[in-house]
Length: 345
Image (cartoon, rainbow, N blue to C red; front, side, top):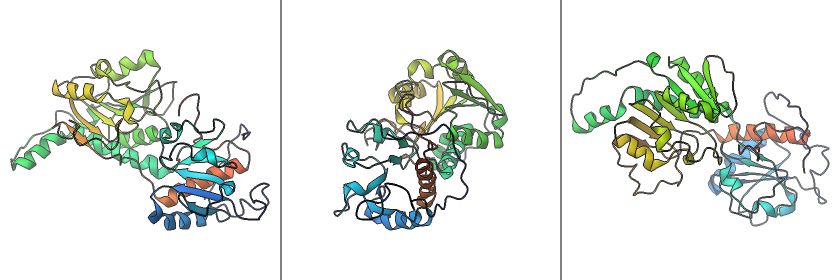
């Protein structure tokens, strides 16, 4: 089990040449380089992954998930999306698992996952920035009544109308104020939206009103004209936005779901839209993905479905994020974005 120290280090550009030189245990009896095993993008993506890691971790060999000549004992790191159950437990010298995304539930649902193994969430800034861009786009679509615009376009109808309020008069509430939530908050504030946030424990963020704990959730919802969900998937957040809580939102409020699909009870959301209590929902994540073709969300006139595309980062940016974490682990430090099994994120 890794013993991480209490300190964190700040790294500059993550070109970590020499990271593995002289490191005990980094080379096996044969002197072969340690392996980073990748399951993301399939075989076609492997050359790009290799080029990205060559620039930031030149002392490591990057192999594809299905490499037929792989020696399991050489695997030190894995970078994965939806690994099959039991596979990760088969690498005896594995030091950490890296998620290609901000979420890790696609890893933790493996019943054979070694309980001591560190799991590191993707920390590329591009990931947070892209989610922030998506949330900002969705908030503006709600503000300007995009469904009405699209309906007029489809019908060839000239529908000149104006929204009832501006961004400055529309409060956005963000469920979850981690790195991604804070990035979204900054972008929304930049175009005039007042922003408030709800977290499990109190956060102090300049320019963002703070709500914390279950006792303050109702007040937070009641004052959110646009609600943004960026919470992780935990037992406490699953089905958090059910019929009763959606009813706490102001009449005409909009919803953006860009965190985990388990946050929203979809039938309850559609019922709130049908009743006219909510105006529009932009949904990027769902409990079942891909969203089944027969889901009523696809054809609902007040729902925009996107295919889990809110957050993305280039392979180079993700390689840099992994390189930083590898350097921290090799130095005996706790890596940034380490998944906390007790908190569930």
